[in-house]
Length: 299
Image 1 (cartoon, rainbow, N blue to C red):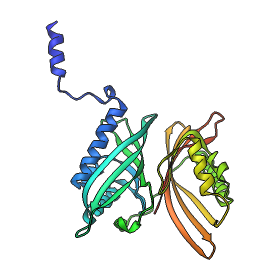
Image 2 (image 1 turned 120 degrees about the horizontal axis):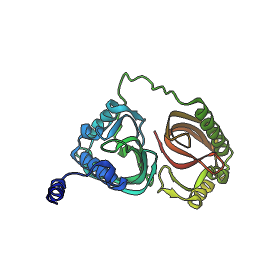
Image 3 (image 1 turned 90 degrees about the vertical axis):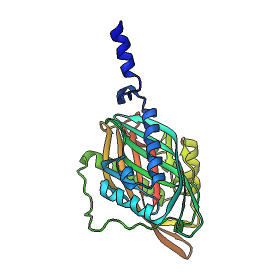
Image 4 (image 1 turned 45 degrees about the horizontal axis):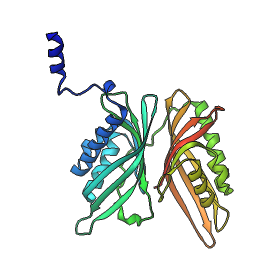
């Protein structure tokens, strides 16, 4: 049995192949590498953890797509501030085909030159491709879990000369998602929060702006009933648009890149809010798309 002893000795200290390591362990390692890149203020190292066609949706900034735009965004961040601390913690991981959908929390501490340090805390949704040697992010969105002064965040201009992205989405899926969004438009405009909540699955999670993550139907319904109750605020116009549709499991689970524009009025005050979202649609027992994960922030 000497051959077996030699084989075992040869395996000691060798990294386990991806198929032999749990998804949770692989994502722990990937998140640790992201934390290290943030602390090192290394935009190129961060870029290496994103797929070539990935999209990043930062809070109070426009979406960035592809390696060049993503690296330029992080380079701008590290030029503007000195990162004092960065940490990610996972709340939940769900496997969907060859992808993993993660929601979690982040804490970042940074300072501008000559200014005191600020703390930026919130939650994130990350979608990882798991079929390669290392997990790669294909989509990520983050936002604060409490109101804050947006002037705290550096303004980072998009790359100049980038053409608008176009996508070859499946027409039938596009029609289904558009119908769902049209219904959301009606329910939000008419302030029908409980019906809006019914478009989520019972075990859904909702990551909206300036609040902690809402998990489960009770928390999601309570949020929408309060947030969309008839009263002082009215919605004069709501435009919901889709970017790329990424099919994660046949046509049963679809990741939508969403974009919105809301015109609101409250008495004499009014304004327009623009933002973006990651919407994970999953078919229920009746074959109808419901939201399983949704993350939203403002541009």
